[in-house]
Amino acid sequence: MLDPARTDDAALSAMYGDWIKRMALLLKARMPWAEFDELLQWGAIGMMEAMQRFNPALGVNFQAFAARRIRGAMIDGLRREGSRRRGEMVFEADDVDNAAFEGGTSPEDPLALLLRSDNRTLLVAALKTLPPLEYQVLAMHFFNELNNREIAAILDMSEGYASRIRKRALESLAIYINTALKGETVS
Image (cartoon, rainbow, N blue to C red; front, side, top):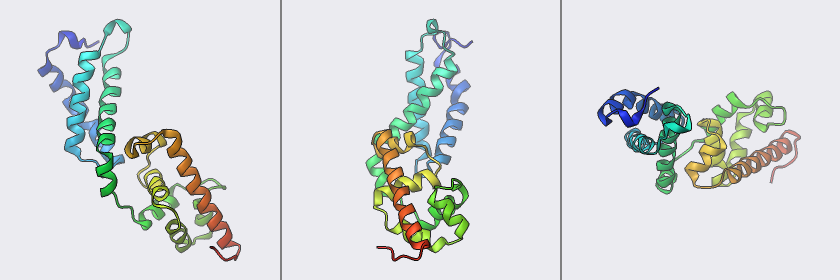
């Protein structure tokens, strides 16, 4: 087992530099608006913090300890930059539409209902009725495949609130879609 207390910083950087880069690439793939260089910087900071805080007496593997700290540092960095990032993100209805058709499988899921009815125009119309925050949360969930914790970190809100927003948005879509498919007028 690697003991960071006995290994110099250059050896650790050489050993874990590619590892940090891989973690940054994975996070970048899930959050395309994130700046890769910033993720690398935050990951390096996380590695330094992990080296300082690691205690081998606790019986935890250094790599497991560092992985959580590095990824956490990257997400913390995104959270700190959240207000700036939120202003730059633009989600197209077609992108959400495509991701929704690929991921909607539950019978109660309005997106699965649209998949069965093959009515993309209805989904786009339903998405346009959502408030911007609900639309953004759905886009992050379906298009970027982010979970509630990651969405909450980026939007600087609690995980429970992100979940409630997603649920409320899906319920609004279901009401709109079910009403339209029954032939009733949608308000």
